[in-house]
Length: 386
Image (cartoon, rainbow, N blue to C red; front, side):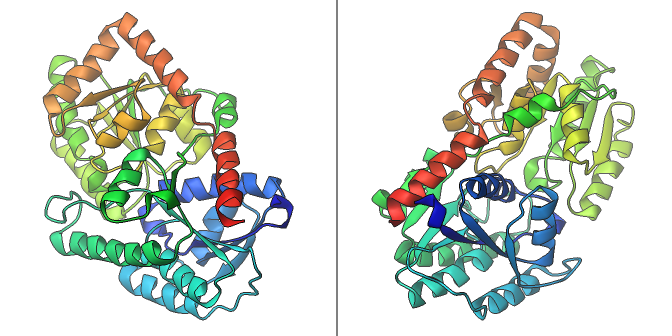
């Protein structure tokens, strides 16, 4: 059946400003493997999205909505992409699959309209996480948080009405959706993953650090919490070092570097910026502990990649982690920088604990191979749509 399957994916929300998201990674890794099963993959995206997909090896067919090289206004760019996607003409046949890679409106609204016009096609929606209370969400001002919250609820209304299958990346998301009135029978869980063979092939870097952070440079990722945590650490051990790897908003990177200098932590914290996979994972393999004080995760692909690099993880205690990472991660009460620092030092100073956590991390990573995730995705598509 997969030999005649045509999948039209909407990756229309990708923003280079924010770096590569977990949703971007998930789609690219699964789509590459679906194509090996003779699935025909079309991607509706921007020029930036196409460049990202091709950089990471996805040789699909592309339909381009916008051609900007840099995003100055996310809102205006998203509106432009939605409008252009709505007027794209597709030759849809019975059994074709519309596949929304995120619940952002540029990925949902075009699929919703196409589904209304073509009832014989299937619509699959991937949902990564739900926005929390706009007053409590970290990283952006209230207005931005409110717009994000409301736009997700608009997307949810369309998804609830017309989607044939909803893929939640963890059980917590599934039951949150059910509480919002979604039909539980249409929701299936299929996790994110990691390329275990790729990780095994990467050699450790010559650059050695004690600890490492990898992720988009965003306030919600807890990047400024790293400063607070390291101030506590260096008081107890002035030699402990941290590498911060990740791209994103240049103003945030500048602000982070300034904070490191202001706190006189230049000898302990090195902000490396964006690195390609070979360099980034090479550095992870040369470190001892992965630190991930993110306040908002739908899954935590970066933490999983760290475990595949044989690192135990210290992170804030998010509910999603209890579902997907029962072993290999030390979870710390949200916002307690002193406790976070103490757990890092405990791992570094206790060889037996370090080895146990490392073994647990390796065992956890082994359960989330992209090949298995893609196989299940294809099974779900075929079972629900045909």
